[in-house]
Image 1: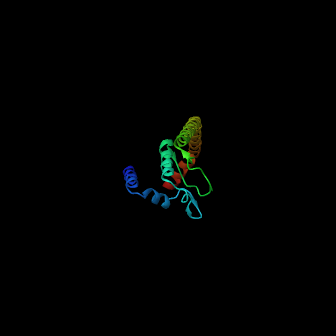
Image 2: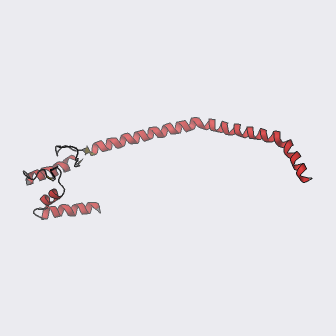
Image 3: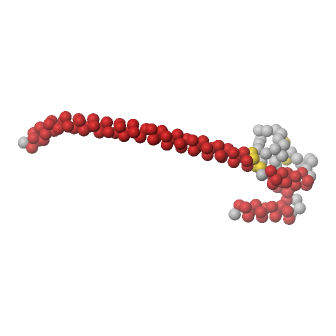
Length: 142
């Protein structure tokens, strides 16, 4: 759906004579004093070069208001960097998962031991208090 809308928008840009300029004025890449920064020396060739750079370099562009000047041909993030970051995050996740599994494997015998020990303690307490419980039952029955 989004891809079809993007294709329709590109067709619109190609069929209307001032569509590129309208688009760039509505969504300027750079602004200076609230106006489009390129309005003085904008040419159709610059617009084509800009789109050509985006298509050829597989890059993502953003307007960063904290940077006063940035070359439009310099990408903020490339797809390759995003893929590398994703691969690093995936590797870190796998290492954390392996560490968790190893810790759980090492802790399991301790958990079983503590559960057995707790059971033994309660069982001994029950065995010791059994004569007292029998005496209490006899008193209640009388």
